[in-house]
Length: 100
Image (tube, rainbow, N blue to C red; front, side, top):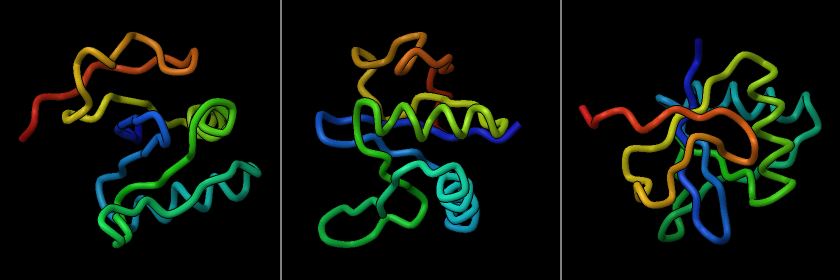
């Protein structure tokens, strides 16, 4: 099963893929599902492994489409543990894996 790591902030939800090719596939699935997304950027540069799906209902639509497509959600290892729960927007999400 394909895993996407989730990191959140008050302004965005990033879905992290293992590489930029996997991220492009995730974006294709989101487009096919009619879900909104935008490139994730940090310090003015695009983060190719991450996809920004917004917050609230926008993030829920994207994550629901990806779970329906067979993806599993997992907290990103750098997500503050105080902000991790057993569900994310009502969807099951696993704890962050220990960093490699």
